[in-house]
Length: 197
Figure 1 (cartoon, rainbow, N blue to C red):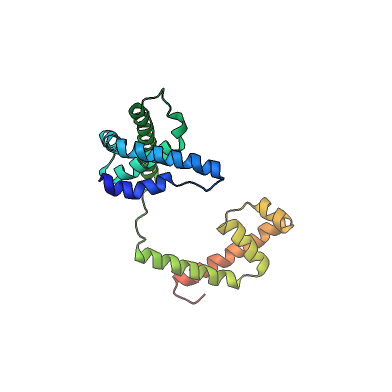
Figure 2 (figure 1 turned 90 degrees about the vertical axis):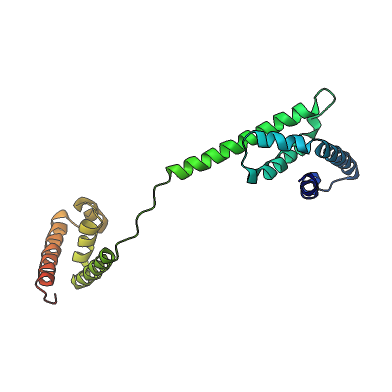
């Protein structure tokens, strides 16, 4: 495990952006220090991650994440801090963050509504037929009646709202709506009797 991870991890962890020569020297020192820390303590980090109950398929990714954090925080490691304790705290933080992310993902999954059952083909066909007949009926109405019928009876707007939208009086609007509803009743009656409306 260690050599394979080292071949993959170290180049990714140690890489940084190019800068001036002084920065390059500092980065080279940091890379050497990081490599030494990695080679000495990767097994320790691996064990800590595993002991914290991380799923086997996620251990390698979290070890990688730990050493990315180590790379960013390398300046904190001075002679006053013991390396293994420092690594333990970083590892614990990375694992804790991962656990919170996984728990959030599970909560989001659990809170998601259950998928709706597939539509019944017969009801779907009936719905499609009803839509087709409704569109056919609407095409028979004069434009002003159609507009009022659609907005009030299909879309659910109130009479006063539609009157304001169409800039018409309420009496006129209700008269148009009454005529459209009467035409719809005749249309439905003809369908029930088997006649072509």
